[in-house]
Image (cartoon, rainbow, N blue to C red; front, side, top):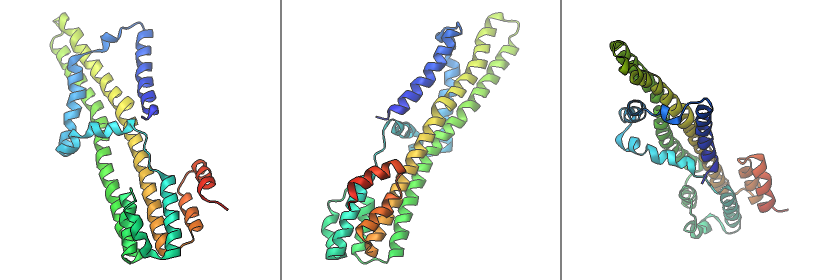
Length: 260
């Protein structure tokens, strides 16, 4: 569970609620069903026009990923690749075949399978980078739906404001209609701003960060596979792979897996 996402959402909504309460206004004052229908549900159905049915229906599953701490097991990958590099130098590349079934990472397994089969290095790089780019494209498609929801919500909020103002102006003589129409006019804008700035934009940013982290791990894996094929010294291989980690993680992992 990614506690930072929970802290962020609870903190944002908490501060808004606290501001409302300390301002002397009750929270129920800001509940308006027509505004909810226009902004939240209206913008949600808008993403169906933007994207495919499966991607639109899966947007909640995409957003759910922000509540999970991504674990790409960089240390395990580096350790495994160094061990396989050592074995390849000692026994030859064909000796890696018996190790492949124990690999949990399908991306690395496919790359090493190509190495064992004697595939040219440039072909291996091209195939693995193609798979990486396809992963990034899939992620970008899902993230774009979250972004679009955040873009549509304020627009629907403005639309609700116009609807409320039109209703108010058409019924100026009916004082009982002024309040409800004004509520729709103002609260829809509030709902749109909340949807975009408190939920969708932060969540899409976290999804982009996770995509960048996974992409970096895959780039590291490509480098490791090609280094094994080139017969690099395991220690040199380890130093190459460690360069993909941030300085803090690099020192910790280096102390554990690269010995004198």
